Length: 268
Image 1 (cartoon, rainbow, N blue to C red):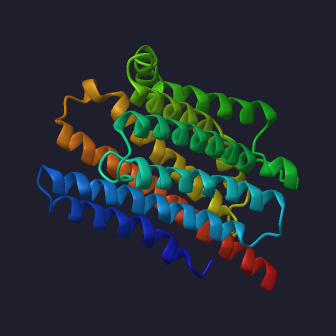
Image 2 (cartoon, rainbow, N blue to C red; image 1 turned 90 degrees about the horizontal axis):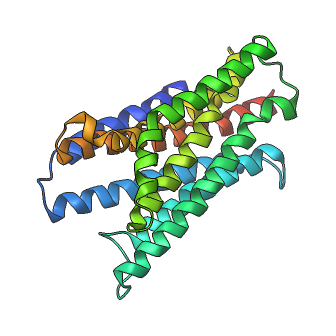
């Protein structure tokens, strides 16, 4: 693929920009505003990448629908931050209502994201692609993916479940963690699809989707093991937001890779 350098450059540029810009803001309102804007920006980039990928397909085509669903996931998360965030929000809305709406948007977004990842994970079956390895090995890889996801964010999810009655923000964390567990569980077939297509342009979207899911899982893992890290909230926030930004950047690259791969296939 001629655009490999661009696909690699996007997450690298996002990583460098994040580290440079976050260092310019000391603790206080300025830093909180920076993170609020940065989070919305990277989510919007991810949504744009997914919608760009979907635009190469005809209406109701399976792959196009999968990318659209994932794009809606990111867009809902962007709208949630824009309208009901703690720093940026609609004027005149009371905090309790805003928190309830945040919960609703996060749950809806994670359901959509999970469905989209499952759809991508089933592409090999829909398209008749032969995955590498035996059926037993493929099943084992999926079990390992589920176990790893639960191991990384399960502890934090368990703690948040105990706080559901008293803390609506715990609902956000639980919905996010469960969504990541489902999405990460789909990594095995997605990664195996990328391996099956190795050497071809279509391997890039699947590999980048895998990296995007890993980025989001590491973001949730950062908060899940908040106490075990023994880090200040300042440093923990930097680590967590770095992983989130990379997850979104990889989603943008994956969407572009999908569009360019299909365009290249059409030209041939």
